[in-house]
Image (cartoon, rainbow, N blue to C red; front, side, top):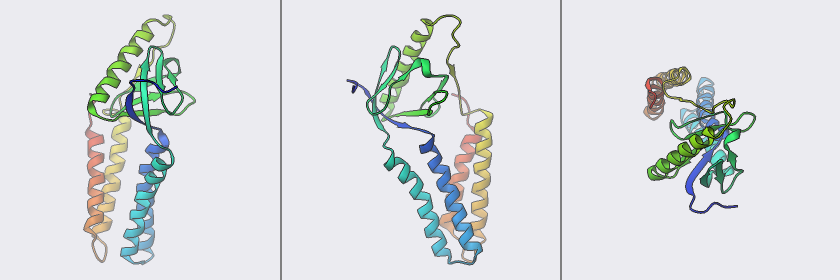
Length: 202
């Protein structure tokens, strides 16, 4: 059943998330392999760019993410996937999107189409979940709200990304023909790492 007056969202899983770091790993690995084997730098850059684009392209085109969601008193109803009742959740978060953690099932990341839709989604979800939890028996374990930014995990991932970015920059600039473009990619990755490392809970 397709919900009426729903909220336009994109729904991602861990597979969508993993496509991005996988792309970076493949790009860096293929570039280093070709360069260290004295292959043409131009070919190395081309292969690296292809590796950077293909995994996310396959993930997002092969597994479409667009959905319409309606917040109900006992959970979320999606237009293109199974409903998610509140009693399936063990935790949730709202750092960059609405994250729904379900033990034994895929974690979902629900991203609204625009800022207005995001505000509506988070407001309706928060209110519905709070009301639902108040109606549960006192012995029921509450659904925890978690935060990514400001956590040790975010800092560790940020530090790793910074290290990879610096390594990419150094390698790009130490080539026989230094690649400013590749160094810029490394710098951009390092900037993302800094944001994650210094991010604070909101």
